[in-house]
Length: 229
Image 1 (cartoon, rainbow, N blue to C red):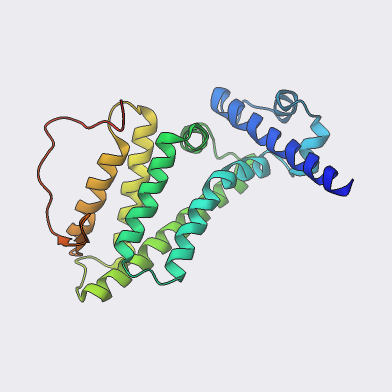
Image 2: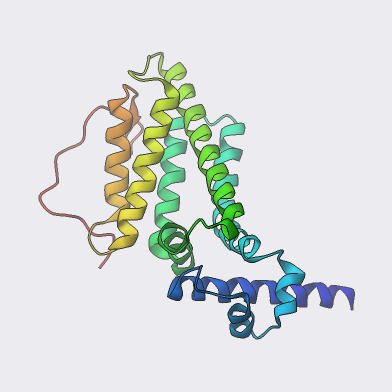
């Protein structure tokens, strides 16, 4: 009986998060009420407060459902001492891009976080989480870039912290541009090319698909590539 109760509570929580995603995307976070979310989920307003402190807490839970697996995977690989930190960065970034292009839920949540939320006083906890996640990502980038420079026995042409900030701006900006018009360019293709160009610009080697270090790629920019048909 206890197990069933826990399962039912979990199912209710998931329905609330699913409903919040759909409403936030359709009408924006500020225009969505907790009552609307409860009604769409087939639950009561009291059920929302059983699972979440307020709208900001619900929003953060919605984000974590998608982003935590990505963040934890990157951190675990770094802590395990990945032999090729640049390959680790590329894999983590490309995995995030791949999920955004293939998984409607991931795309929806990224779109909400980028374009559907206002950082009002009510949502101050969301702003704090966004800043904290951003800083943790930049810290991971810096750690990987420093390790790559040590392994390659090279000195980057800008400080590692600045390089990490620039890489984060590149990746987050590319994602936001793609979310505005997903059919305008191939996120995976553009992401890989820009990532590798940026890394080379720092003076770091990039390994090609066959494991050899590469310094340049053939110029094949005759037309924008697409992720799929």
